[in-house]
Image 1 (cartoon, rainbow, N blue to C red):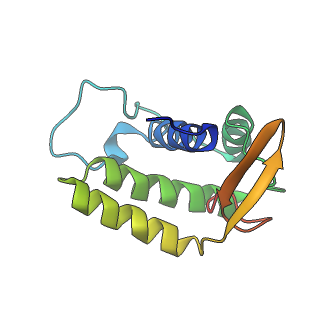
Image 2 (tube, one colour; image 1 turned 60 degrees about the vertical axis):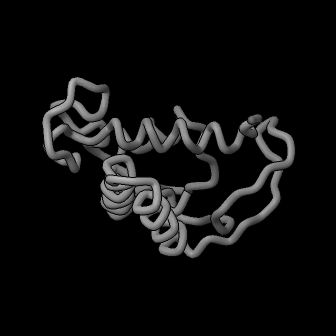
Length: 130
């Protein structure tokens, strides 16, 4: 199965986002030896959020502030719930809720050297909606 670049980038970004969470914020029944989470918050401040956006080539986010940081941390917690879901149906329901909450507006775009692909957020959407 060929996974398009935009889907691959989005999935990698979500995994990396969840991995920024401190271990004690992750929804787990048992401690894990896996890579999820660390002892410190990888999104400790707005500067870290800017760095995350730059590292993951998230464009069009504008000026970021504390409100954006809080919103991204909230989305991060919701994505962590997806990874901790007990079964695929529950995970799908959680993803569908995330998409609905973002007010998804699919749009074709080409930018930053990438060929045509779909963005599932409105132009100038908040970084949390990205």
